[in-house]
Image (cartoon, rainbow, N blue to C red; front, side):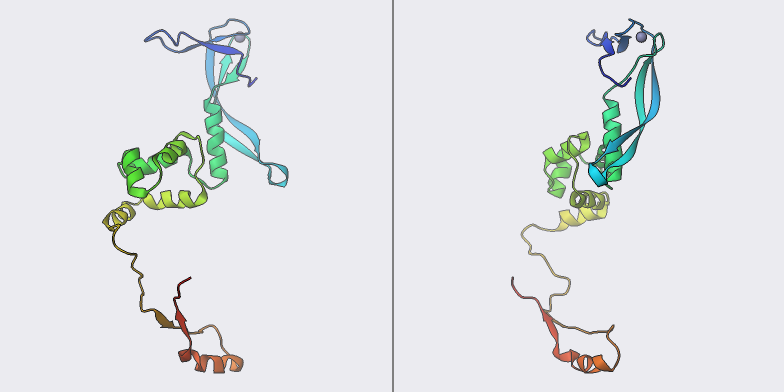
Length: 195
Ligand SMILES: [Zn+2]
């Protein structure tokens, strides 16, 4: 069970023909897809965990009981790993882009994310990192795309508070030992300096 060489797809090369499996053990044609949860190990050593992939399809020969999983098992396992790592699944990444009604190339241009990276994340060839995952989450809100579009690339970044120097206060320091420090607080300033 679970090996890929027990059955072959027959008829897939004939145009218009429906895909059909034939059992390579007994030649049986009565192959029925069954949906299962699949448990698997992920990680190494102390970090190893047991994950569950849901909706894994297993093709079972009704004549001899032989069974195999097709490539969708791998995709469901990939989804389970993404969830475990707190990342969007490939389908969810695609959904973000579709929710703002953009093609891959439009979304790439609007966000600055490489189109090839997007394609890899959406197909499950590569996982986005946490920072990109967070960025994608923000991009699922149209208002953030609008902000990016409205910002001229020639305009320098504007700081919300750009006075250059601000008084620091110490509201959490109380008691006699801090009174003198607090009394001097007007003399303290925070200044932005060039690194
Ligand atoms: Zn069979």
